[in-house]
Image (cartoon, rainbow, N blue to C red; front, side, top):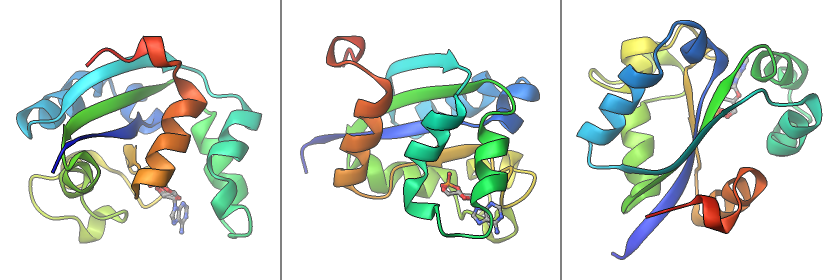
Amino acid sequence: MATQRTFSIIKPDGTKRNLTGAVNAVIEAAGLRIVAQKRILMTRAQAETFYAVHAARPFFGELCEFMTSGPVVVQVLEAENAIAKYREVMGATNPANAADGTIRKLFALSVGENTVHGSDAPETAAIEIAQFFAGNEIVG
Ligand code: CMP
C-alpha cells in the first residue's frame, strides 16, 4: 500500500493535562510521521463544520462545547496505511473498551473526553486535512 495521510486532533483534555508530547511519543513509536502540526483554539463554527456528520446526535452540542473549551493540536500523520494504523493506535472511542497500550486506554477520561480524534476513511481524511491545513503547511 502507498503512503497515506490521516488527520489527527489532540483534544482539549489532552492539552489541558500537558499530554501533547506523551501522545506524540505513542504516535511516533507506532511508525506514524507527524508531517504537519499546530496548536489552535477551535471556533464554534469550525467545530460544527468538522463534526457536521454528528449534528443530529444528542451529544452534538456537548461535543462542540468540549472541542472549543481549550486548545487542540491538529496534525497530519503519514505512514503506509496511516488511517487504519492510527485508528489502531488510538484505540476504541470509549476508553473502557480500548486495548492496552492504545492512546485512549493510556490517557482518555471518558467517551467524550477521549484525548484524540483520527479520520475514519480516505475521503474524510482529505476533507479534514483541508479544513485545517494549506498544502504548503504539510511537509512529508
Ligand atoms: P471522535 O473520533 O472525535 O468523533 C466523534 C466524537 O463524538 C467521538 O470521538 C467522541 O469523543 C464523541 N462521542 C461519541 N459518543 C459520545 C457520547 N455518548 N457522548 C459524548 N461524546 C461522544
